[in-house]
Length: 621
Image 1 (tube, rainbow, N blue to C red):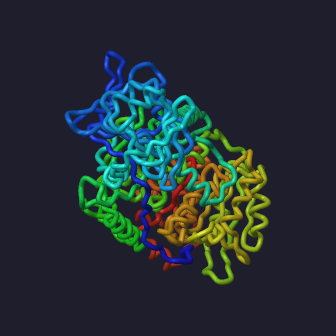
Image 2: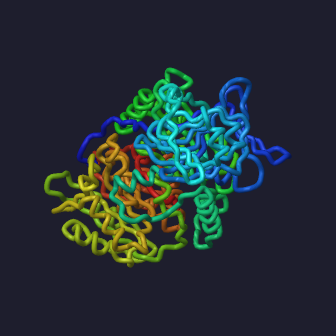
Image 3: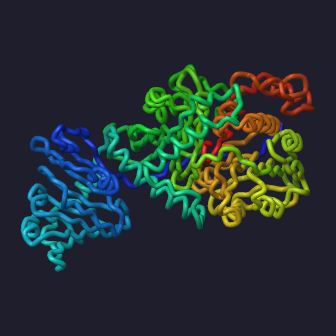
């Protein structure tokens, strides 16, 4: 059996990121007197994003941070650089420290308005070392600030007259800066703050790394994301063109799962752990849910490496063993959030992950009873802000199918021709095979609004560094992934509905490579893209996509069509019979298998190697 690959996988590298915030005994309380108590306890510290702060204080009532016993209470406000924050209408109660930060190692400029009564309740006001802070207050407020301003680069602005106060530099930032807090479970209100911050930073990261010059979407608020979920659910459950006995249309209920890994050596509660994972769930209607899990990065890398090794070698995942990599990774990423998924009857997830987590084969993770990829439909995105979430009811364009089986310096792919022939489209399909599949034909034809979907079957490789290093092979030439960005220019107002790369991802672990894979949809200006996580088998991959298109042609949402295809493999509804691979309802997917190919495949088609590595990026519908 030939496989679509060129290079070997590497170990996943964990990305470090700035650590912000501590939370101890953080309890949101809404009392009858309409006072909002942010936190109370023996030792309390709350980190809150400035956007969330404005949302919390938009209605009537006090915002209070209650100092517990004789220990410190701290309010850490994370602002944007060059942001002005007006706190003058808030009521504080016994705040030991008010800290302003941009959260950037490069620093920034922050301006804050405080009145005398607030200042009287605060013992110390400071900014993190890299940031510059201007405090706007009255003359009496300035007098109240004496002895409370801690650190350098702090300006007190009185009646438009600036006075630098650097007299007291005794505050030890090495001991009390936000990077040195201990982390515990994350409550919903801080999850909201952290989530908004990460959405913005991940957009900037992806925007820069992929050289994106325009965006596909702008989902920059929780309410806009929830509206997208509700709209998609409403349109899908009411779409009368969906006619499938395999898809429970009336139960469709999507959510967004955000995973963010932060390196936190010497700052975790469990000293054997050196990082924490923030797990944030956005439900269609209910409030945001946040969980925090501490972990050892060395164990995480070991489990992921061992899981990949087991998958690629087609060995048993040993899911009956709680210590198997599949079970351990499920425990880490999903065990804390799955009860909430069940309670809210979630069927489909858009999983937003930072670099370092995009290579996790979520479909192959198991809780001891079932695979995540069989139970849930999901799509992966490196940036929620750049993912188009508007549901397209029934794409009417044609399918552009291109591929090659013969190459100059690579092994032949004997089943590509059958794949291109057997994948079906509700609308017209145009096929370009071998010498007819050229870079010019892909870009010129694919740029036309006549086509809604593009399917490429060939060799491909994702390499470290610039997107131009990653290639799709034709019979006589190569196409750089960077060339796909031409679609963004030429199809600005009508993005491709689905871009399928029936090839393989050949390097794992480099952050640029990883982003190139999950950023495939963004590069191609597609609402959704499908690619693979590891070396894939030529025969079975062709069969997989023929079956997938059969589900797609029933108007089933994309991520759900992939889940149904996975389930067909798992339940042995895709099987070898005579010289063919048959799919659901006995449909011939590919045929003319050789004797050795039949023997090699045998009864192993339900192995996760064949179905867990094909993944959808971008919109799940």
